[in-house]
Length: 582
Ligand code: GTP
Ligand code: SPV
Ligand code: MN
Image (cartoon, rainbow, N blue to C red; front, side, top):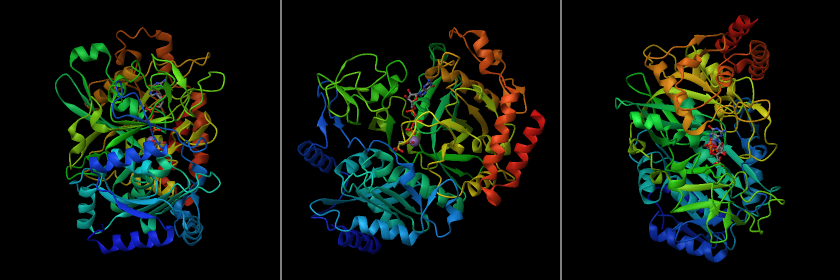
């Protein structure tokens, strides 16, 4: 097979010339194709079949034990000018990077099949969507891309219509951490990945295309590509407001995107609709509002911590047609991970007999891959070619101290500062130390495809005459008490905070002004049925002025790190707040 598009055929031929596969397979995305691939992977050990009674068509993939997360230190943005990648990225000169990668790719697909995956990020018929082609030698990547993107014949047809696409080349190589690179060439709309089969490193439509390359394109085209969930909150009057929220990796996007409101809310008629759980592309519409699409078609979510108690919607979508990566298994072949409320693991994620003393059953970054349509709160607004209008943007991180449960930014510039200044504890989603607080502007530290200074300026540029921008908030579900216990119940109860935010949007809720932002008073939050100690709530909703003074000084140093590219308006906003706190 081949394509009507000469540039695509030529590229596929040149990659085959370099990598020397035994066979080339153009993916059409059909069920028959998937069935053949699953059979192949069951035979070669890439997949294990899970319990067909409890989990029909569910499979377990055990990765190489040293290939379990994103590798930020091996991820590069290769622009001609180092300053265009910025201090927030690793940089390599494009020529040098191509040289390194070509050496790795040379003959790497001998004895393997090369799969050509045409995919579309976003609804096939949406003007906001963008396409790419991933070439890979991993059938596991094909199976995941099939769930995570609109893949196959319809995508190829659109690519042939558009005439352009992002080129992504991936090989698992030897799965050797010392021969592993994730390279981005935004000026060439190209991605090259070698040596890892893990999600963010290997499913090139996701972080590599939909965030790093797309953010670079979005800057020149006047839109935003963000690490955000998109959720619709329907009030008892039947009005739905859409919220986009940026939390760093493994900090609660999937959970917020499909939360089940507390019982009282459900009784009153509140409903939650899931549009996306990880990536959001936002464009200004003719009416001045921001309209968002979810470029993905599935969820690649964190398994540990997901349970009937914390995320029943996720549990309901995971009992059929799902791929589980690096989870444990029960004696009767059901997937199992830490946090589950029932079942007992028999084997851990490496296939060893489970022994608590040796380690957890599931890897802390174990993941599930599942179609978005299987989520009970899925809305077909996720298929809307125009996207959904965004009423509020939320930034949030894991902060054991200082950052209150919620506050509102005074205006857009203040909100951009809040996003830029965001910090969070690192998690198992990337290799390296876990629990270290670092700045993670807009939850995009690992994903912005260009200099953060330019990125902040791009964010500020949306505030122009006629714009009807969303209100911006910061939240923190992760405050801990002196004993190290979470102070806020989180999960479904985060609905209470969402309600306050949306009532701020519609002018129905009160707030106290502070230099840091506008906070609810304890009475402004619905805490009915929560049983939260009033002193704890008071602490969650207060500002530690001395602590914030120090934080503002750190934020100043951080912003200065982007030199002349940091917008003056952002520095001025910070200085104003620092002065008010002094
Ligand atoms: P990525 O897919 O890595 O981008 O992550 P994500 O932001 O979608 O994170 P996810 O929702 O999967 O949550 C990661 C972990 O945080 C899980 O173990 C959750 O159980 C936990 N978590 C999510 N929401 C809350 C919350 O409100 N409170 C607490 N304490 N934990 C939460
Ligand atoms: C993240 O790390 O933010 C993820 C998982 O959503 S991955 O696709 O691996 O990037
Ligand atoms: Mn993510």
